[in-house]
Amino acid sequence: MAKEFEGKKLLILGGNPETSALVRVANDMGVKCIVASARHTDDAKEYAWKASDVDGMDVPGLIALARNEQVDGVLVGVADILVPSYCKVCDALNLPCYATQRIVDVFSYKDVFKATCESYGIHGIPEFYLDAEMRPSDVAKIKYPVMVKPVDNGGGVGMTVVYKEDELKAAVDKALDASPNKRFIVERYMDGVEDMGMYYTFKDGYCSASCIYDRYTTDEQRGMSRVCLGGTYPSKHMDDYMRRMHFNAVRMFKEIGIKNGILMLSAFYENGEFYVYDTGFRLQGEAPHLLLQKIYGYDQREMLVRFALTGSEGPKVDLYKEDPYMTGKYAATVWFLLKKGKIAKVQGFEDIDNDTRVVANVVRLREGDEVPQEWIGNEKQVLTRLYLVCNTKDELADAIREYQNKVKVLDQDGNDMLLKGFDVTAALTPSDGYVPQICKREVTEVVHS
Image 1 (cartoon, rainbow, N blue to C red):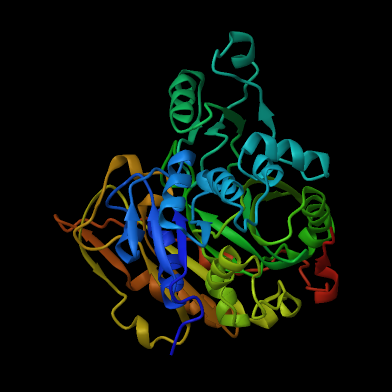
Image 2 (image 1 turned 180 degrees about the vertical axis):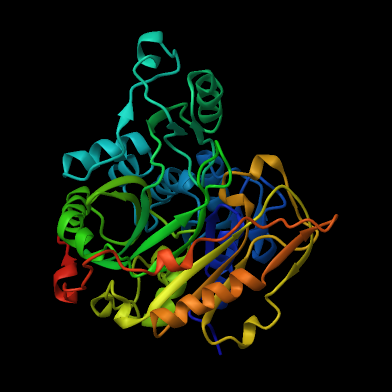
């Protein structure tokens, strides 16, 4: 039987392991995928019809590649840094693109995003002014600890927590080295506050709050960006978010002009206030779409491939049935983070295919792979991400604890390479007075042009 897009060619920008799943889904739809990235050994290239070493930042090179291959569509993989290239290439080739230059300007640069959010009543993390000249008068106003990060990179790349002034210069240099546009920001380090993710899906102007969840990060790596350890769904702060921030966010999305695609917001929660700190307008490495696929039956990867080739996300995407309370289900992602070293043995996942609670286990690293020091403090140190969906909160808690206890990773000398996981009891204990009261009709909005 012929597949829906048999023979169609799709240029995918970026080749990291998170993009590999997108390529495999496109393959199953009959698409001939051409993966372009600067590294010849990138994981996604293993599954591609063709692989190209054209850098995802090289817009003229990508345009030439697309024209030479006569592609039918272009799609960005799981990489914020490549969204601007994606928009420019699509525009040059007159191919469907869910982003516009206005959207790119807002969501691809942390400083622009932060200023835009403030104009809609959405607060960002308190910031200290500093530029590359590091004038003593500006440095003197900084109150430590602070986070120094590039405005146009993600996944923890180029980020440093600074606890005292003599650490500041090295952190600024690191951020500038990781910033294509040589821009950085200095923010209050939000230590000891709660972390959240807000995942929105758009189809033809309709905006759905697909899921709102609580995130947990490691505190074992002093001076590094706090890499995620996992998340639990739905968030214990759901009602506060819907009342205080959701509708401001929807108004912002509408006025910026978002019609289609997927958008993630990340925010800290402290004393009833939300502080947005990051965003990504593309398929997410955290992959909440795997949980949504299990609960609602549609695949956001298929949705994005179809849009790239036709300009429509397709009839299977029914956002009206989505509910950020996840129809009464409880879900989680569990990330297993590794210390520096070479992986000799991984155990604990042997029976995972027979576990009905497991939706997916997305493996990034395997036995024989090495975790270098430069990967510590960003998402490259992730061994695997485990996805769980359960009928009750107790069932979910038991599942998380089971895998946290039985998964072991040893280096060549028999040393434990795993960082400790998040506190399951604290994660799944509701905040005082939490009673879900908002119905689905109140938490979705139609966004018209």
